[in-house]
Amino acid sequence: MKLPDDFQWVEATPDDDWSGARLDLAGHPVLEVAACRGGWLVVVLMDDPRQPQANVAVRSIPAGMRWSARWALARTDRLRVLASRRNALRAAGGEVAPPGLVRAPRAQPYAREEETLDA
Image 1 (cartoon, one colour):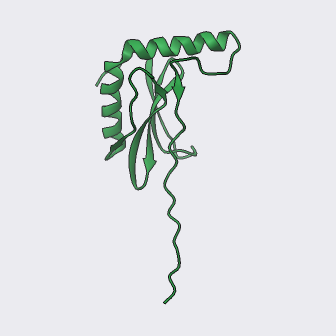
Image 2: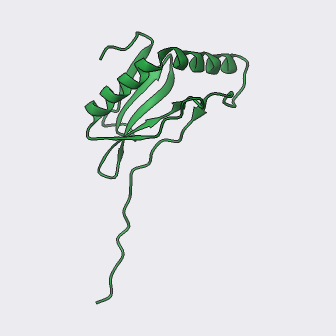
Image 3: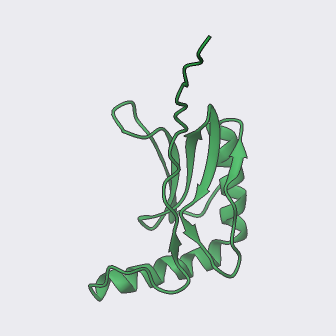
């Protein structure tokens, strides 16, 4: 699915400390397809409080990228508004996210701790 030119996919390389893909809008992370519990999770990094979006489990990175593209296309105008607010805040020297822009933490891979059983 073709996204507007101001959207860009960044895919992790073997040298990165993360795996998956991230969708950026004018340099701002919007969504990330990240490894989670042996599968993949689409994590919304630029969330709109008017339309909150839960994380979505997907079966692969390409499936996550397809879902993310449809999601972003449905919200292109609103995402651009949120990104422009972020740019204005950066230009003013502020570090705090403005109202209407919520940065969700990156999903951490699930690490299972084995518990020894007494026989």
